[in-house]
Image (cartoon, rainbow over all chains, first blue to last red; front, top):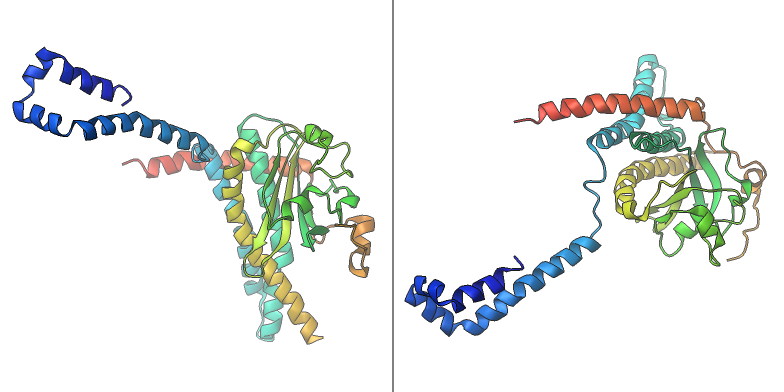
Length: 276
Length: 55
């Protein structure tokens, strides 16, 4: 493409080549020469702009292998399987004497379901690392947020790995930073390096943490709030800014499911408060 | 933003940072084992999807 202008000009200038081109075409070229030259010089310019845009554009489609995509489907199915098993178990044991309220209470377990989704996300990232032959220990925490700060751990995985207790209510924690300014995904490629920065996004309450981190705010456009923040840390280099869009695309799918359960949980709490 | 004063509702969590939900059966070893199983299933699935979509 880049050689097209010079090649065309060469054809036009070299007499033996020019002789082979019909006279009508030569006459037309002579008439429209200005437009043709501008047009031909636009080609390399446009090619350059296209390359530039491609370089800047977030590429993610090739980043997830077919095995990775199948694992993602498995992760999506996992909480659905759990919910299906629960619903069908209730159906099997349902009795005529059960009221509609009792059936509703028996089938809806949004708090637990939300934890199951988080568990699926954790296993998904474990799988991704394993597919890349990397031995990494992940820690996943889903924080409940209030006024921009984490106030409660909804759940964490592994369940033996309790998050640092002072992270709660810390306005300088990673989760709090992710919830700032209407929410933004944060990727820390090197936690130790980040900690040394004057305006570090890593909480002072995590002095020994190392590796990489990914923090994703779960936004509700309906309530215009960020009720939950997901924080995943890897004890080695894993999360990279190059894959930010990929992680966001993946988490966006889970976020919808999380928000459904969150809304159901809040509504259930509201309904039981109203009943008492 | 200043440190949020603990309220009655979250004092317990500030002390213990207990999760709201504990599912159980979620030790590091268990989660890694499940990841391994998922990969096995995924590799099988990938091959099957490939066969289905071959025209």
